[in-house]
Picture 1 (cartoon, helix red, strand yellow):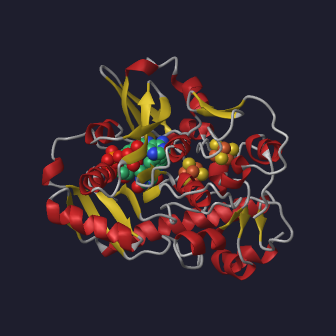
Picture 2: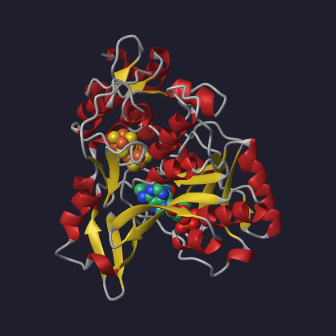
Length: 379
Ligand SMILES: Cc1cc2nc3c(=O)[nH]c(=O)nc-3n(C[C@H](O)[C@H](O)[C@H](O)COP(=O)(O)OP(=O)(O)OC[C@H]3O[C@@H](n4cnc5c(N)ncnc54)[C@H](O)[C@@H]3O)c2cc1C
Ligand code: SF4
Ligand code: SF4
């Protein structure tokens, strides 16, 4: 993977609308900061290589390299990534009535269980001020619960990973979308080989994602229809609803998805990962019953946490129906295919690392296998 400086980051990612505001480049130096849910570059920096560029999930990702380093297995393009198990789960008896969960409360319940067991002492989460998503370092059960609920905006969540790292902690959980989890993987790979590096992460938990919205564009879309400070929750109900709902204390706003999609950054259109493949655990809604979650267990560490959380009553678990698993596979596979085709058409898909630069590096035979006939005309 080519590592360049902040000027190239601005040219190749931010100016092309590929930035998904993950926060991996923020708070490392005085120049890039997270401000009101967005990343701002205050001054240009002249270093030829920077961690901002190295950690960005949209500069140049070698999917195989990330997979081998983080998951210990090669990238094979399977729709849901490598996994040990997949379950239907929700908050267990110890967590009943504890939080305003988005779906079954699996994410928050597992974090609470991880903190109770001493596996983690903090969690890099996302809270919301009005409509603005903010990174937040939770260090107690109450703080974990205060972050429950999805904010469907691209959020600079990872900025607080750097904040935690500076204190030399090593028991951090990080919850985020697949692009944030890819960036987290890059952070943990120490791509610039810094001697002062230590891995702060004890648990990585991804959220399923098909898109996130640019906060400023969303604000422009809805500020005349709702008081932003009064927003209590947001949701994207499963098809056939075709709306995003925003709830305040006295209003239920339903915005057509066609309108909402105008606020999606271009970076999402080249994202091949729906289920956060480079993590210990991944959580999404359960098809057909959003009061439950789908939970993918990817690593031994994730598995131990889930087993213990079930045993102690933090989590309830059941088998997932085969037709739901098949549907999830199809959705994830379609997202991959769309992303590789879009990246290829934008000249952002590279099958030969020597050629670059481009946003995604993937082996030629694999992309041909994934795209079938459409993969025969790679650039
Ligand atoms: C932008 C976005 C798009 C999503 N798209 C899908 C989808 O297409 N299909 C699907 O099945 N699920 C999707 N999800 C996941 C889903 O909304 C739930 O987060 C997931 O099912 C976990 O539910 P829960 O009840 O266990 O979460 P909770 O226990 O309520 O916990 C939610 C956690 O999400 C974190 N979080 C909230 N917003 C953000 C954000 N913007 N960035 C990073 N972390 C955040 C919070 O810190 C909290 O820890 C998406 C989530 C987000 C944030
Ligand atoms: S995608 Fe993340 S790392 Fe890349 S420029 Fe945007 S905020 Fe920074
Ligand atoms: S679609 Fe991909 S790039 Fe966009 S927010 Fe979701 S994980 Fe990030």
